[in-house]
Amino acid sequence: MKIVFLDAKTVGNDIDLSIFNQFGDFVSYETTPPDKTIERVKDADIIITNKVVIDKNVINNAKKLKLICEAATGYNNIDINYAKEKGVQVRNVAGYSTESVVQHTFAMLFYLLEHLKYYDEYVKSGKYAKSDIFTHIGKPFWKINGKTWGIIGLGTIGRRVAQVAESFGAKVIYYSTSGVERKENYKKVSLEELLKTSDIVSIHAPLNEKTRGLIKYNQLKLMKKTAILLNLGRGGIVNENDLARALDENLIAGAGLDVLEKEPINEDNPLLKIKNSEKLFITPHIAWTSIEARKKLIQEIAENISTFLKGIDKNRIV
Image 1 (spheres, one colour):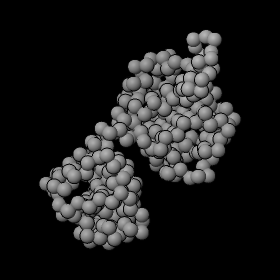
Image 2: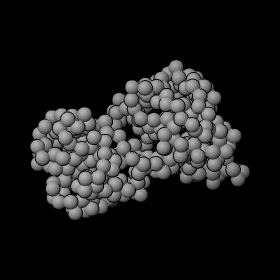
Image 3: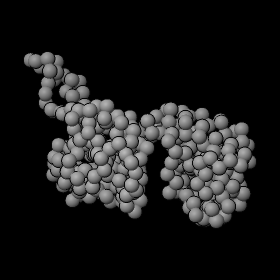
Image 4: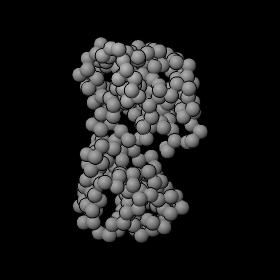
């Protein structure tokens, strides 16, 4: 067996990949540009990819290919229909980063809500040392207890966020992006009601035809001026031009984004040019990347390969 990992840099250089050596000849590339993909997989039995596109052309040129392992939950970078047609199995990994994403959701909230950058700089600048009182209330913040937390996309991550939000004393409501009726412990509301009534709105939905461009200027106008928007789903769900405008017009108190429509971010992205930059907190798609989550991801990929070789269908997509 030859196993090729096309973009190992995406799981971090601190993660041991030697677990894959047990399956045969393992080759790892930090990154793979599109013009190198076919050459690197032409004799591969198994491909591991996080974001490298495996399309019809790649599959056709990988004559020995039997299995594609997605090093993530989402597999929109793989032509799964064509893989099925060619008898190539596809397996992903789900649930490995739930707690990591939930933790980052609250980290982003606290950074914005409590103006942590401002207060840290206030002390380190020497201003606090010159203060005539023991405290400083330059930027007031409110507590989560008693507020309404609206969740867009009540899946595995959304439900866990809801549980933690409740532990802070928040009232949780949600909007279903799929429209599927399920019995939940929280009140289901329309998107309009959620945006109008929530103090915190967090997005934990996948990007699809129902969620692309879901939050535009007109939706942002519905939100409270004191509200905070958090997007830990997919970048295309929030219109970035409209969000930049809304922040500059003070329509909402702040926004935290871990995902963007184009990753890495374009240099001309309007979010990098807003006047009220202190109202925006952007991280480079790191919510999933706790050390534990990345270790679990690699272990699960190895298990997917092992079960495939044993003829077991665990985590099989096609």
